[in-house]
Image (tube, rainbow, N blue to C red; front, top):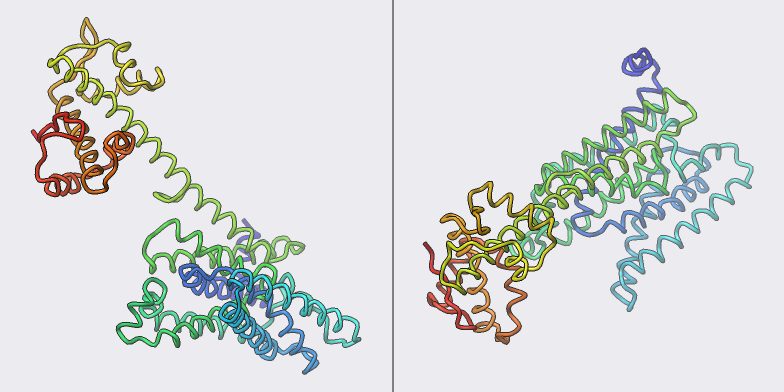
Length: 430
């Protein structure tokens, strides 16, 4: 508790620089990363992150000093150059964009390593700490660095705020944006520039190796929590800001722990939790939904089976044993027992001395399922020209998910039919 209070009080200036810098860098990268992910340009961020290293080294070789503004300019130029080369290769050769990205990434990073090795053997005393750009060193941020990188981070946030609607339209429907007269090419160039800047300002914190994680991971995690872009941007920025502050706290309490890798690790943990537990889109939520649908299908299949048995005898209220039901509809015994107990609880079937039978409510529900099945079979044969002996399996699946609106549309399209392709009667709506 005392350590946390000491961190929050931030009596040490360097702690303030590291924390504020980490939060600004992480949040601004996440905001720009949302548009990068939506435009399916995630790999471009990785290429730019590796391509800035030769720019940093060249800026140092030409000036002989580690002025953050000069290093920022050098890394920005090579980052932009990498994008121009990727676009040129993709447009003027048979090489696809992903291959071009891999080529540019490896070549630029290799050149950067060569420059960095040359600098290390040059004897220049100012080279100390330059290798931190490989893996980042947020703890090395000083006041001048904070002013430079903080100004760029704020510029990114302001640009996204002012052009939010244009960037949103560009991400989802560039063709429509072009139709209404927006300068699509100019907006693409601006968004690409912001992506390069986001990468450039982040390398001081996490380095060129991990920077793509800062750009992409929070956006990918936020995408699982919402379908709205505004909420996605806020969630991604909040996640990154929290991880930036937490990474700085870990470095403060355990000086041997580097800030940048901790930020990325925390982001990865949040992303993993999002992938697993996010509502509607998380793995757990999808599993539970699939499980619920499978149970619903099993229950509706039992109702349909009892209805078919009633069609054969003409007595829908007649009782049938589990053996008779299982002979008509094969399914695991434990699943059948569970489904029948649930149907009984909902008063859709009843159990009598001779077996199981449909209640009046169960008969109506069974008619609905059978009706959807036979309407779909008729639609497949009449409009898609599928042979009548090939439509049953497809109808077995679709009958459980057709909505009342689609049912009405099918009935109108088929001119209120009374029989399916096999001349079985289509139950009418009660």
